[in-house]
Image (cartoon, rainbow, N blue to C red; front, side, top):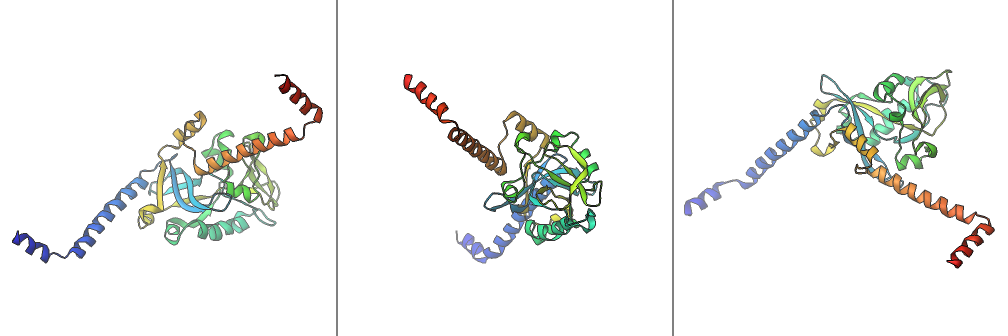
Length: 284
């Protein structure tokens, strides 16, 4: 017993604690990095943060993995439309556009911290071309975009007859120097274009992540939320998937809108119709 006390007294517990915490952090980091490296096309990731709800509450951005490159980097496309912006005030040149400048500066600084920004290749944040949109989404149905409640508040319209989907920008020039290609709420590509000054089309960013630089980030900087984008989409069709926060808020909004419509419809009915309903209920 005395020998044990001597051994314990000779130990530097603060140093041992630091060593064990370092080892634990290393293994957690290794596991999280390995998890990110395991991502394939169709998987979903949470990376960065941006206002999502009506009140402007900041939440993680959900991305679809479009492609995993040989160097291990990933091409990611935002699952939802995050903002409503105009392309430019006059011209359709993507490199000089107001939208590109906004993505590279204001959006980047708002959505990613300084460590996350180091993982974005060349610091470039872009949007899809017509060719890329066709390659990623082979049919109009898959090209339908839903926007966050925050984007709705920022004046991005929803097409009620299309199931609540919205219009979103592509970066190809349109038929004139003042128009740019876009995808309509039904998922159809309009190469003729929309006037560049229209300020309520949704923005759907695309980024390329350098995973070697991302290794320096903490394990909380990103997380895998779905190992199969295709499976989650099928679950959505079957109605069995767990709703994400934007979907929940959108569904609640739809329910409120439906109730309001019914109330307005009842309120605006001619008095003769209301009276006939009262008479029927009285007879019962």
